[in-house]
Amino acid sequence: MIKKYYFINKFETNNIDKQDKQTIIIYRNYSSKILDEKLILKIKKYCKKKGNKFYLSNDISLANKLNLDGAYIPSFNKTTKHLAFSYKRNFNIVGSAHNLKEIKIKEKQKVNKIFLSSLFKKNKNYLGINKFKLLSKLTSKKIVVLGGISRENLKKLKILNQSEFAGISYFE
Image (cartoon, rainbow, N blue to C red; front, side):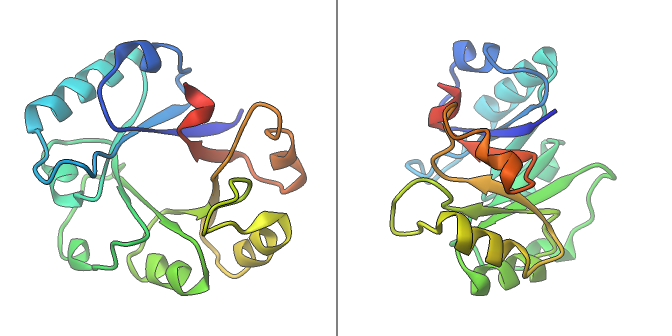
């Protein structure tokens, strides 16, 4: 079964309702400087009721404090302050990278998995299949495919020997 990571920036129950239990919900709202703890707890409660794990983006200490399942470190976050904290046993930290330098930073941050982008989406971080394969071999961390995943190109993940992906548009 494919494990999926769904990025949301607002709480909409109808989108979460469409997901299976293998989908991990990641809340990332970069437009607001202050995170709304009540909203995060509301999403956590809803995800738990639905059987989905719930991660918070870019605030590991808050994710830990609110007893979430994990945290996501975006590629622009290069800090290692979180390494000074202790976490519950099953707390996962994942992070994204677009190149070898960022992969090495994520390894120093001791993430469990690296979201490598962009595989299909032709943006400034576009890798394509060959560069993606090359970069994914340069780390021992588990790789999660990110960027431009659609129902049409989902089968290509098997060619890449990848069983996890992350995105937004695929889920909506």
